[in-house]
Length: 260
Length: 355
Ligand code: FES
Image 1 (cartoon, each protein chain N blue to C red):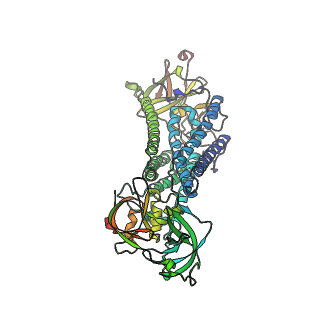
Image 2 (tube, chains in turn cyan, purple):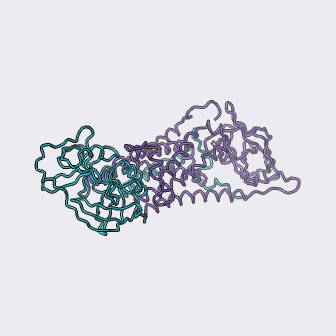
Image 3 (tube, helix red, strand yellow):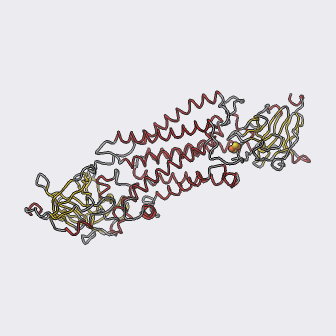
């Protein structure tokens, strides 16, 4: 006869456990040892996994305090405002709404005009965005006389390029969600871009420096929805790159984008 | 058991068990969240919602490993039986943690947008043909549905309604849920955080779960292979044990062949035999004891009278009994099970047989 499978128990054979009866002494001792051990182990694993998270980047979202800006709105390819900072430099802020919506609807009537608007700033790597304060918060800025301050940005064509990187929704990536990229954020990014948040192509060079390319169709208009399945994946694309003021723009076609 | 159902038949053990489970979950989530906050200070802070999503998700995945390991661990070493006793509460707690993880994701990643969050969840990503881009969320959702089904039917009411075998089969879906969750993790967070050691950790979890199951399974199969049926006219009788192996008021598991087992009990110098399979969830009765004259299952403590396989009043569960006889010092069992609840004469141990 083979040994019965219960044989390895270090419990005394007379120590029998049932939940509704008092726990036998030796088993109680075992449980007193194993329970704290398991709890410590649990806390240790939590510690290790929490510290293994990758750095989400230095994006910030100043959502505590709304700021007012005076500048000129441009509605194409995506709503944005150009303002002049303290140093006299022209700075571009993309405009989006609260939630996962682009700022097109409210900004369009002001295209080409000087306005005063208020909202919350998002910023990462010098890329900037304003989340517009809801309500009637964009007004024509009649008092802006110095039109020179808002001269149209200089354009410079940088030629056809093939780039590798990730298509992100600019709002989350600049700091609304951290991290706002990668596979786990893919569906959110898709929803954001579908809602009009400008898609941005983020590349990294060997030193890990990021470059941000605002993505447009070949004709320079806002990118179409064929981009959506490729959001947040590692992709390669070909397009013509231009510099417009402090923005880099890539004009491309969804057909040239492929996962690698 | 079958006397009117209450939500939970509480006892001290269950309370302590639940306190440990809830304490463990709070501890895990608390440590994860605080360490995440402390290590990633602004401007490199991780969003609170994402920290919570990760804390809850990893916690549920970890708990599922514990749940899956308890079964084989308790087979291999009886000291783990107290963890098995209230495993269903652990299962329900795990489901709740997973549900909180999913609710946060649906609200945070899928809320505030152009479409309903549930529509977004199901339609935002339809790259089913690409492994790298695969909508891993869907795998988690199916696993969550399975866990819901299991948590919702974890009460003995459902066990009774479906019958133990069907209920057990339903609850075997936990392995499907586990497989889905491994894929959910591999195609999800492991794509966002491509650290090889994290992938290795998930792999190690799978290896631990699988090897414990294999070890416990092998042990059972080897044991089943020890059946020794008698030849000739006595073909129905199987030689199962030596009288000397039976201890007063203790159970003893023996094999009848063809994967069937019988539980032997020695009470007041008599040998009784019942099926080894508890009517509750199939616990090994032969590893139990005789308490107050009743065979007591080691898993959750259900009881049956040794002489007729019936639960003492007011309970009404019945298990099959077997005829036993003693030849020399050997215990023999008639392999034909008697209908559940049939009274049988025990085999009496003579002084001589006891040696
Ligand atoms: S299996 Fe639950 S008491 Fe026997």
